[in-house]
Image 1 (tube, rainbow, N blue to C red):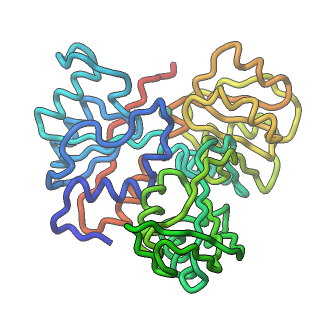
Image 2 (image 1 turned 180 degrees about the vertical axis):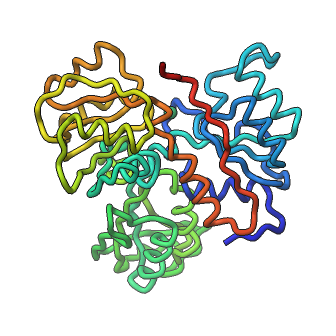
Length: 370
Ligand SMILES: [Zn+2]
């Protein structure tokens, strides 16, 4: 728990990264601190969906010098800041008023407790699973040490975040074997003499870890291994990560008719309008969701056996991609992500006590319905 003394922006950022590691973000994204200096003392945090000009005004009025937004206001490159569009005006105003901006976006989309879990929770879906598991995110470390040192090395690796698979921690594989080495005149072997071929009983320790933890894992390895020269190998694995990824699928306890289901979604997500594909006369029990623009995952939802897929930003032709296999519904971009800011506020308030963490009162949804 952090107290309100000496609360720098970087301290708040470390809590935000605990909530959603920036390494979880998609490559195309622009997350993290977009404006401001992390060494600045923070006066308060304003959490919003989009860091528009009126949000910066709200931050000034509420004496918050850090705006935490879901969507990054700065997304593509910017070469001039003259205030000629809404992005430049927001940035100019933030800089003029010494207000920092931090964006979370796909770092939280990809988190198992993030945007899509929040979406599922709002609908009461249970038994949730990631819809599109993240690829190329797991690495494997193999290292060798003497039996007396194995526990220490393994525990240090676990402590640094290695060995987590699904709902299990401290996962490793260990095998016995014989290691050999011969040190040169510069060497200083812990076991054996330099220039002598040494054979020693060793344990081979194998663990997997999320690739962004690599430097932490290696530091733990080097600090806890007794050898002068630590032998180790790191591999990239092709396994997808079942706990990180976009979208989510879950199920209702009781199935619903399609029409009742859409009315239910409309009410729970406070959606002014839902566009949907043809009703199939099927009951809805298994539902896939993907907050924001999710047309890329229609096939994943079908493959996962969803009866319905809720997302946003669907174009005309994409409704055909439902292929009469599921009910496809566009509930609105903002609407599909609407409870994210509340989650961020709750997370920060739980971790940072006695500090101004304020939920913005502005509605930044640019889409209106007649
Ligand atoms: Zn979005």
